[in-house]
Length: 267
Ligand SMILES: [Zn+2]
Image (tube, rainbow, N blue to C red; front, side, top):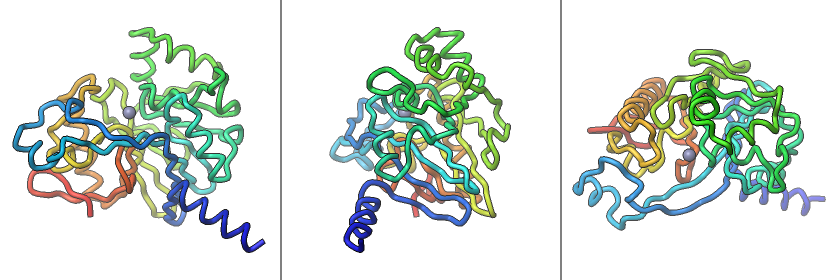
């Protein structure tokens, strides 16, 4: 029994990194760990590249987070349609069919793709899905994006839209961080005096976007607005000393930041 328990604990330590903060407990679900190159960046000077990305390689991950807020389990984003987030959930002791609430930061495939199982079914059959109204309108009504429409169709009657400032579910408020996409949302989680920001794609590459927050990425629909939202959110996180969980932030995935000379730094 002891052996089994030890193995379980070791496995849990390897496959996820829980951050326990009283009423809020966060489990990081890793979809992919990878490296990117500087062609992903927009607006980085030669000097900044030489200083912050000397080998030209950028660390990057695709992540989702399971956050327990006052006993309720909320899945933030779902990763790619590769089954990895569902498998990570299982490894952490949760069943995908037991997930009741999914909040989406935005509708890029590395965030909503995992709503669809490898065989094209609803990966989380009992989940209610929440996404901001501007994000839904952009992909579904304006672009008529087939991948988004088909994925959401698997959750017919269970798709809910919200506005910025809304308390989407108990203890979770939607923050306007548009720019990366027209309805991109970060979430402020609050319970029992504890707080966490689930940032979404506010940062892709911490090596350079923390010290030089003016650097955007090629995936930003409106790079100038994305830069503005990054500074707004990180200013707030630094001022209030709130941990930030980002869907592409390289290990340790959840960071605390403070202001530095021209931007921010981890501490
Ligand atoms: Zn992304």
